[in-house]
Image 1 (cartoon, rainbow, N blue to C red):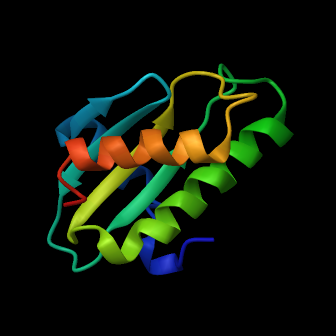
Image 2: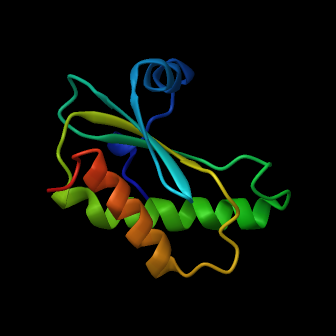
Length: 113
């Protein structure tokens, strides 16, 4: 679970990242990144019902992505708002491949060195 200080929770924050953030794409995820004046990174994970109708599967994917983010927090550059959106159904894809895909997107966005 991400610490509360590292979560995007307000709708207006989502809208700002969506409107002004720079998007980065892979086959599994879309990552929108927006620089802010905060001293910490804030993240949100979005998995819509288009990905899968079952809430159990959507929530599992959210938990996996949040865990990948939590493990990457010490290495990430600070002062960004980030929204991670799932683009395709990752059923049957291992956690290792999810981590590899998300890490490559963070590198594209220059959040990771």
